[in-house]
Length: 208
Image 1 (tube, helix red, strand yellow):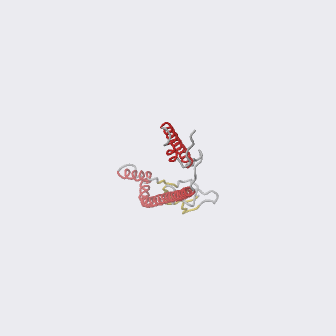
Image 2: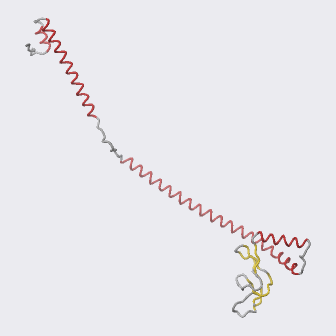
């Protein structure tokens, strides 16, 4: 058995130089196998170290970023505020639209009522002509029929018939012959007219 030289591989080779060729070849083969084993061991160590450097995250667990959570909460708060503002503005606009429509309808009804009230004097003349028999036939009858048809189409209704209960809010009494218990209408001196819920003119009556 041959003992390696204490001074290292180079000294070993020098020591073997004095030996035969077979011994020198065996020594060189041993050195080559030793170098190959050292290289393989180094690669294994390096691979293990590289694998240990990465920290694996357990399955199902995620890291929560506090900054991202705060940003999401702030955005949600702003969204809720904008939604509330939009709902409030929508409600205010709906109320405004209803109010404008109501005011517009009141203006239309008032204007229409004023025109219809002016026509009532013509209707009174036609009623007197009818009472005298002047509307039995002829052009005046056609005109009277058209005027009454116009008032009906606009929703104008006449009220105040003999025997109706007396109502001081819509009846104007010019003569009172009642005993005060349950007064009713007597003679109708002038008919009253209403347009929808609005009274265009009160009826002029006598009470009995």
